Length: 313
Image 1 (cartoon, rainbow, N blue to C red):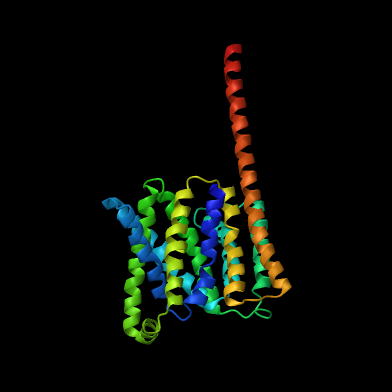
Image 2: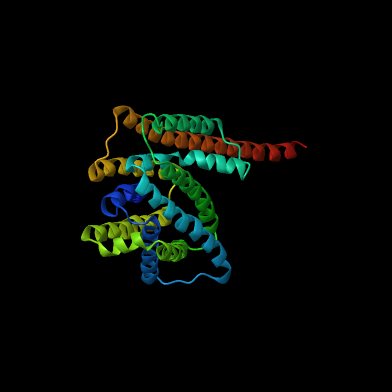
């Protein structure tokens, strides 16, 4: 059941790009980020009010800035500049970024499986994003790379914070803080360049409202609540498996809503990227568990040998 719930959350996240292009085309990314985060955070807080302690605010501000404000802004830049399928599949390369991050920052040497999987993903991505066969906006590609970095850093902060705080305040306040930051920046941007914002307000439609409801209620309130709640109830393998629904949603919704079409070769490359990411994570987890099992066996054997040696003396 937990896997199904996690797949639902990942699927809704994967619809972000196509839904934005179909219902909110031309809307400023900063405004979209603010409208997705702040109302969701305030509604969740109203459902179950809470207030962090004084010493918890600094890390929550850092988390909200990276995980919500910066990430949401980059996400909607991707949604406005890249095909939905490419955005969804590109985000599957997250394990490669995580590997390099922990290698450089935490001096955690990757395993052979991780290196092979990472090299394969980079190679497949090179062929998929080949500018000779697929023209992509460089701004969107840079936004994707930065968004991946935000996920890795934000997840690391969330993991450490989860050991100290209940999951509900972490969920509510990162959305409120990140949404507030985006709101302030969006207002400043609107004051300096009002044309796009005025056009959006003057031409708002039921389709726009429907898109906002989808992003706020389903992509944020529901999906983020499921994710944070399930974070301590699922294994890495289950999370990895559930994440497959994200790029699948990007490909399907891009085809259905926006009419995105690719060649058979490009679809094959997308499928290979998804499977490589899944297989690499599964093998890494398997060998990690196997190594832990060997260490436990050695500990048991050593504990059995020591008393015997003492008796013989």
